[in-house]
Length: 298
Image (cartoon, rainbow, N blue to C red; front, side, top):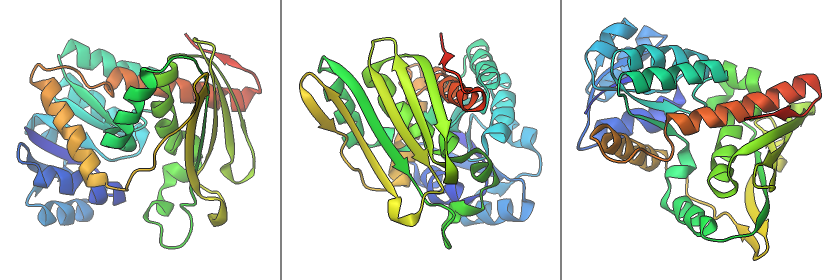
């Protein structure tokens, strides 16, 4: 599969470019970035060609991988889908449900496969946990704390403008929601509150009657950094296992999933529709923070 990579930031360097360049079933054709010099450097490092125009790179490939802010990604994804190119997108797919729905519709119209890169969901330990949890009945709640401190000196993500503006809800929130949905099912209502230092609390009411509690931040004090997740129910407590930080390995599995789906195999459970469901939940939380009211979904 011939891939075009869009984006030249730290995530493109840490995950996308090395995984695509090393994949035995992938040709990394080219790189486009908002900074042409960075695009040229990243392309040269991985034996690809820098592109000056988005549509030129889209035209030369079978699929696109995007490592850009969600609003920029949404525009490129829509253009690529309308051109019949398969999509490997980062989370969140977009900032608005409308933009995400438009990508899903274009992908369906042009028979485009799509996968959304929820990093930990592509690690075998997490998939095995989810399968065990799905086979267990009687879950009543889930609690996830995902607190980062990315604005500390030396953190490569601290310069990200969209993360500074949109905070943990949109950066780490997608990971939390993607972990909960396959176990507790669709969300019917959302209530959220944001405090100081981007400390965001989200309460999800699931159609099943279960409730999820999320504590999210990317600007927590360094001493409070943590990633804890557990499900609670009639059979007791199930702690989500920690997994090693292996972004290239995870992204390689995402590429595998896209190749299978594009070849007529089963769609990934982390497809564009799933990514859009996550966007709608996060948008509901953002609306609840703004209005102070519970937001109904469905």
